[in-house]
Image (cartoon, rainbow, N blue to C red; front, top):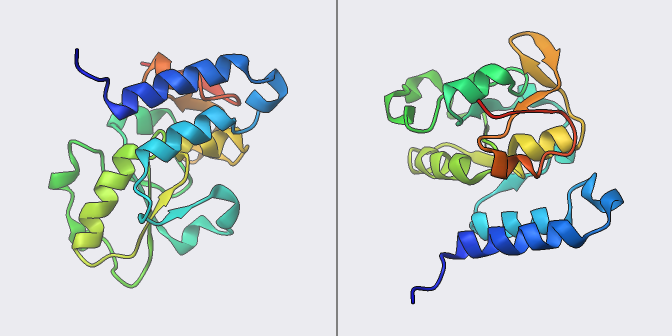
Length: 170
């Protein structure tokens, strides 16, 4: 019998923990969510927590999710680069003298894109917890130039981690 992949095992443990933690704790970032994120992130990859960001305009903000996700909501000023589409993104559009903040739903896809940017000489930070954590901490989301409460959670399974905002799956 094959052992489950660490990511799947951690997700199962996270779901179990999520089901037994008090509801009040579930409204903020839960222990289970933190545990899940710790399995997704490389220890030496730089992350920024939402509360560490005073002004998004200090960064070149890149949304590494799929176009449908970005169209539901995104961080203010974010440029959509996609994940599967990223190889076609022209790095000439970025300024190497300005730090880059990458994000996705929880931070796994954005970390992968961030590695590629670092290989090309950019200073890169991954948004800790992705757009889900950003929304849970009640930071603003936008659809175009307008504020929104909607968050595309990638799948229903990932949607369990969104405690604040309106979940969108399609």
